[in-house]
Every structure is written in structure tokens, then in C-alpha cells.
Length: 216
Image 1: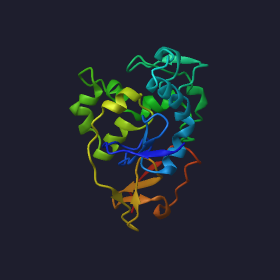
Image 2 (image 1 turned 135 degrees about the vertical axis):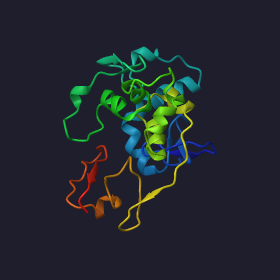
Image 3 (image 1 turned 180 degrees about the horizontal axis):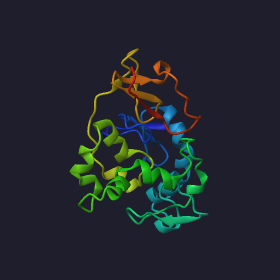
Image 4 (image 1 turned 120 degrees about the horizontal axis):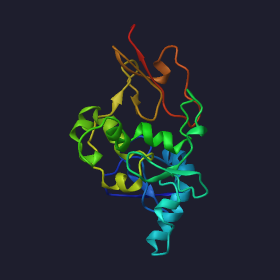
């Protein structure tokens, strides 16, 4: 689980920030740091083996026989409504309000450009070309929806995410990654977890919480 440098303009699969490193095994996944590569490894490791075999010209399983997000083959599997691709049928894995990222189906349905385009009933067959989708989010969120590891790999590789300026906590000045960290958003701006009031931390390995405070 090492990384190799890349000169390509890619986004981290976890946070969407610039990713100078790629997986040295398959060269298909990109990360901003060793920390985020480690965080993503449990979902990537099966796909990594498939991509390595593909790179060597060896036979690989048909895409409809494994989950396109985690590579699991021993089901249960289903087809996504938004793009008709194979994914784990695992909504039951998710505990309400846990902010866990353990359900491939839920992650794709809630946190990708693909399913957002479908749910909002925007026009056009290609979500990555949809101007309305882009207008609905700030640049950092747009980049994350396009390139996080809840997307199918084909979409990640052909995405052209926008550049964005890093955000900083308006209280302490610390840089915050809004899609990978616990943040609080209110009228006074964005606050890091340490500066947020009355916040319950996200569980280890869980999805970031975003709370909205309007009584500053």
C-alpha cells in the first residue's frame, strides 16, 4: 500500500484536494496523503487487484459480477438506478445517524455527481457535463462529488473537476477540508471541529458531519 508520484492533475479520492500520489499497485487511485490512502484502502484493495490484472493484460471478471466501488464479488449485488451499474446491495449495513461510510449503495446514492444528477432530474445523459449540477454546489463540493471513491472508476478518470481555494476556519485560521472533516457552518463562516460549539465528533472512519449554526 505505497504511493508513487504523479504529474497528472488529479483529486484525492477521500477529500478532493490535489493528489500528488497514486496507488503504486494499480495506478488508478489518487491521494493527497498517506493518511487518506490508508483510510481508503479497505474499499480499494479488491479493486486494486482487479486493476493490476487488467494492466497486465490478464482476464478480469465481468463488471456486472462485482461491486464497482469496492470490488466485492460475493454479493448481494444490485444495479444502480442512476447509471445501471453493479454495486453492493448493502443499505442494511448503515445505522441511521451514524455517519458511517460502510454502505456502497448509500454512498453512491448520496455523495456522487452521478446520482445527484439523476435525483434532481436534470437534463442530459452525462452528469459530468451538466451545468446545472455545477451551479448547485461550491467548487470544492463539486470536485468531491465528481472524484470521491463513492464514484465508479470510469467516471472518476474522465471527470474534469474545478479548481478551488482551500477553506480556513474563521476562528483559528486552520485549513479545513469540508468533505473529509467535521465542520460547523454558520453566519460567521466555517469552523473546524476544535472551534465548533456543542458538536458530537463523527465516529472513527465515519462520514464528516456538517452542522449549521445560525445563532452566533
